[in-house]
Image 1 (cartoon, rainbow, N blue to C red):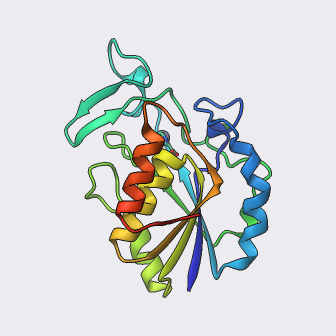
Image 2: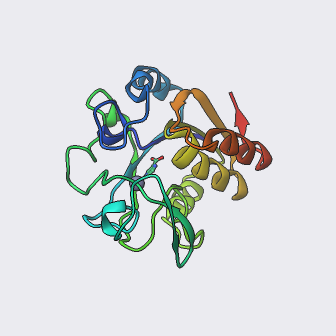
Length: 197
Ligand code: VGL
Ligand code: ZN
C-alpha cells in the first residue's frame, strides 16, 4: 500500500504568504494530477497557535531567519505563519483537498516546532502518523509539497528511518534554500535512503 503525503501546501507558503516559498503554487496542479495513482492521500497542515515559540516575534531582540537555542536544540525563527484558523493556514485554494483520507496537523505545541509529519522537533514527541500508516497497511510513501529543505526533508528522513519505502518527487516540491539548507537537505535525505526524483 502506497500513500501520497502532501506537505504543507498552505497559503502562507505560497506567493503572497507570510513565509512564501518561491514557485509554491506552481506545483498544485501536478500534485492534484498525481493523487489518483495512490492507495491513500494524506495532507499535512502547519498549525501554530498565536505566539508560537518558532516565531521571531515571540522572542526579544531577534529577527526572522536567525537561529535560537531551544531546550531541544537549535531552532530557526520564522515570521509569524500558519496561525490556527487564519487564511494563511488554509490550504492553497486549488489543492484538491476532497481526495484526502487524512489531514494531519503539526506545530500546535506552543513550545516545540514540528517540521516532520512524524515527530516534533524534539525528535521524540510523535504526531501519530506512524501508527495511522501502519494500521492501514501502508509500507511505501511518496512526498511532495513545501518546503523541500524543511518539512518535506524532515518528514522524508523520519519516514525512511521508520522503515517506510520513501520517495520524494522533487519536481513537485519547492525549497526555501537559505544558507545551504537545500544542499544539506538533499544530503540528509540521500543518507537516510530516501529516493529522490
Ligand atoms: C515549514 C518553516 C516553518 C515548512 C513550516 O513547511 O517547511 N518551514 N514551518
Ligand atoms: Zn511552521
